[in-house]
Image (tube, rainbow, N blue to C red; front, top):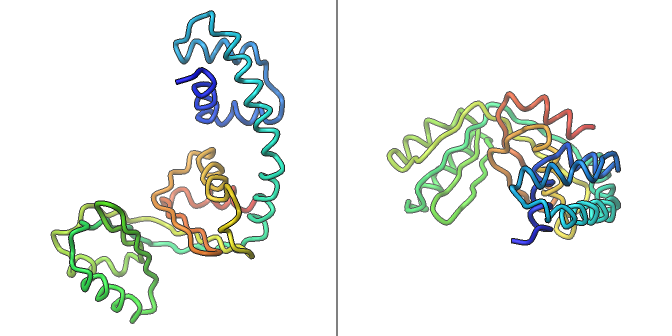
Amino acid sequence: MSITKDVERYIQHQPSVKECLKRDMINYSKLSRQIVKDLGLAKKDFDAVLIACRRYRAKIKRSAGAEKKLAKILKESRIIVKNKMVVVELEKELSSSRLVELEKEIKKSRGDLNLIEGSSAVTVITSEEFTGIIEKLFRNRIINRSKGLVEIDLISRQSLEETHGWVAYLTTLLAEKGINIVETMSCWTDTLFVLDEKDLAKAMEVLKA
């Protein structure tokens, strides 16, 4: 792994350092010495680390225009919040007819249902009130369940298919506030995040800023 990549990864995992670089409010020499120490590099690597820091600052500066565009999209987006949500992971090897039955039951009650199919599991996102139906239909096929969640639906005014970096921009905003994302998915103009209910206030503060 090159020193440049190591330095970039280090800064990306240090939001406060990245923000100071973005604002050009940092001592590059002190930062480089700290990175050399934290990454266990040799003293001779100092110059290479210093150059990598300056290049990363230039990279951030070039991306400032794109970030402004993303911030504008966020400001113009509508936000819908649903509380008392549950996320249930099911074994992949299950009858598709059961999933169809689950969808019918939830839609009958005018509830919301989102399914994410992975390589080894199927994730169900819905209201806590349908937990009983899920347990009845899938019994021993349940791998894990998480309650006390909220779903945040960001509805943008334009298609996001050709808007590069949108999801990364949002996840970075939330991560910088220490907010854990339980699940995320997107569809056309909608971007959904499922979070712990305790993080809702912080998330809204970030997304409405």
